[in-house]
Image (tube, rainbow, N blue to C red):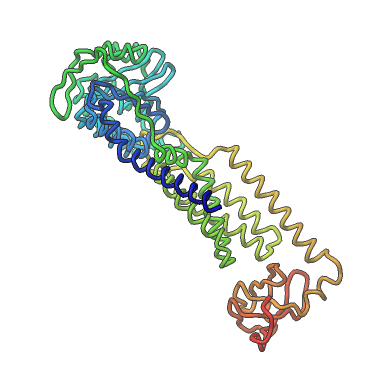
Length: 456
């Protein structure tokens, strides 16, 4: 046994040393592979433009500069996104020390709304055959047209923004402005003919071949791009970026917010359970992290939290289904308006929302749970055997919701609505004893000598 234990310890030491050496030599080995050798760094940006993708692009530019890349290629496919993130990305592209080619690909992809601004901001704007660009007219987050006053303000701002980008990159200002003013959208051939983009490329190889010898205006000055025989390296999202992208999905953020609110409320009504509180806090923090990447309507958040409170109250207070119905209504309303923006909304954000299927499923589960809880309450408390009342009489419990004189008590591992016998105030945590039972209501009195009685 001793020999075996020594072997286990030796094995663990060897593994630890191996991991330590690998960690220390990793950067050295990476350098030895020639990060400064000529190469093009390729990344893919798809989906809604938000702070996660903004951070990804920022990291790509930094890595391209650090590794001495000749060129950064952003393969773009987006319906649009947050204007704040779009502005930050445009700033990154205009100030990049490394030449950047924004490549709308693969075939069938689009650079819609925010994608139009990003494509126009690249040193080289390139499209794959079968792609389109444009439709950057300001709309509300619900997909509806804005009112005249708001539309004029937001539209003028967006139009000035895209004109300034076009002027900086030497592209067709009027045609790009039309994508904002009249929601113009162009095919790859139309965009090339009107100088909205610079090139059409079948694939990355074709793109590199066409870019060879062209000049890019970077933050470090004019740079001649030499792509002949250039190695292609791919930059993938890291684990954190994948995780943030996952939770930033509207449906996932809705689930996190719902579970988080429910966990916190359960812990508040049942102090000491620990697990619901911990899970609730974690889910809420993740939900708020996700909502920071989305155009959230905080009224929807309030409705969802209210639904959690009403659900717990239905179980604790036995509200005969009324509280449960209120919870379902609040949950559905909260989910519907969670990402609905009123007033000055982002002009580049596509219409997003919680899936109607998810809302319907959540509402259905909540309704079935409500029916079960209400039925169980009536069956176990009112329609149970006649001796139920007598069995409860004389049992000891503890106050979990202050009796003023009506409140909540825990008796026999069940939560009951109770009234103090003499209408006196009984604080949370005080021991009580059941005097009588009337339907679903217990009449209790404070134990006179709780220190000599066994805790329930």
